[in-house]
Image 1: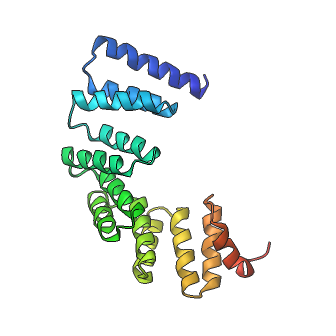
Image 2: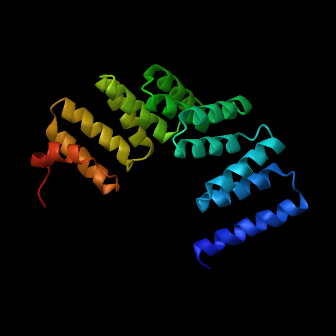
Image 3: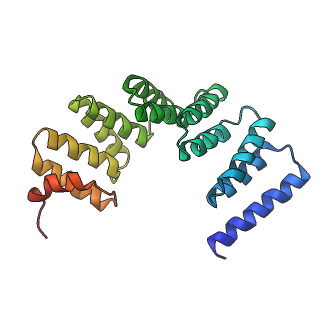
Length: 209
């Protein structure tokens, strides 16, 4: 059975389940996830809204609504939904990280740092949060802290490309071009798409095949 056929069957199963129990928040959420997989955003949004109507503390549904808002460029909506998720489930790391991402997009570094730190407090293995903290500290000019967070991400996942990208930028800033080139190679090995500007910076220092 093809993946698309599997998703269609999954959606049909959730619809049938809702026919028997239309007030089941989890089933609305599952149906929303099925629609989301098919990029049927309007239908997914409707189901996630129904899910939180049935269960106002279903934080995962608020997170998904925030993701849909972000996909259409609505940072305010994304922030609001993730704040609702935090209110309903304060120790859920994901919405804290999403709040941090919104603040990061707005250039609100202090608020972003606070949010990402809350995320890793609730989930010490949140790799993307460490990587984002690395990026923010780089933008603030704190290279030591940027490197510390990037290396923490790599402790958790040795093939995490964004962290190698951050380290490459740090080494370039420090004029350590050989080290930067090594980080670029590792980022590329992890299938991370390194920006052309960085590739050009380290081109003379990369090992020739």
